[in-house]
Length: 335
Image 1 (cartoon, rainbow, N blue to C red):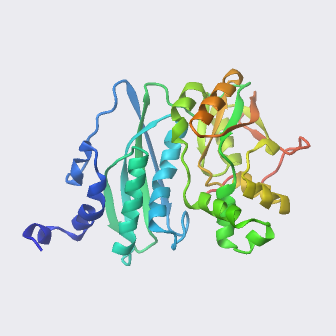
Image 2 (cartoon, helix red, strand yellow):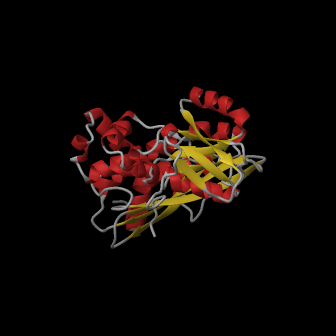
Image 3 (cartoon, rainbow, N blue to C red):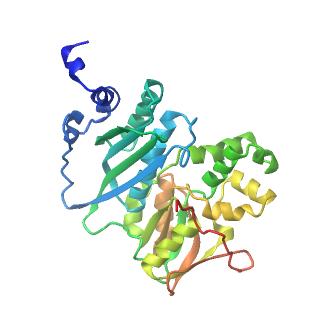
């Protein structure tokens, strides 16, 4: 071992080995300083977001470390996408139990590096700590939008149409499958359907491809992380509007449809379970079709599911008979 290596602390060696290679942005300074420095693009506002994931809460202890890393970054990128923002970089804080070592860190760093490159979102800095609790990963992501153009929750107007990307409920059902393997047989799922539902829980797909499209056409938007019913309710309250959602129009995957056909009560899990990381947006009626076409060209399906009305922050989810559904809890909540 060289004298320089011997002088380094264990934390410095860990950073140098696993994370310095990911810090490719010149403002990261190779992770050799206490902070990073970046210059925002001209004429842009910075968009800041942080989300953490905790072992035993957001992922299973036996989940592959590279997939855990991808999830940690992607849940934050999902928020940037819903705001119409382009990623600039991220900060990482890791709290690791004593038993976590190279066998976990090496694939974690590989997965994180692969996604940082794929999404154009380099590591800028962060911190590493020991913990007596579960693995905790917190990422703070930085994005940019043209000045004054961030798509907020507030902004929806009566007459807007409500649209959602992708499919809803897959991750919540995937979590149910992870906890109860017998559910796959009970729901009549094929192996492919089961794998697809579980994969949606393991690694989300942030809709970064349509960030600019949302910025051009949406009056309000947010990512769906805690359940469509609860999250869209938050948007309605922020915009001081009401809305009606046709539950039959909410897009479902083949696996979710199969499960729902066998167990109709799963509609509550689908609408409130969370971990979708899709985008729900309000769009002026005249812009829905162009948004849908542009999103489709970018590889993202968009479905119209309802309409915004005048009101005071309420969202009604209507069954095929036009009757509002009542949920025990509208969304996932830590508290």
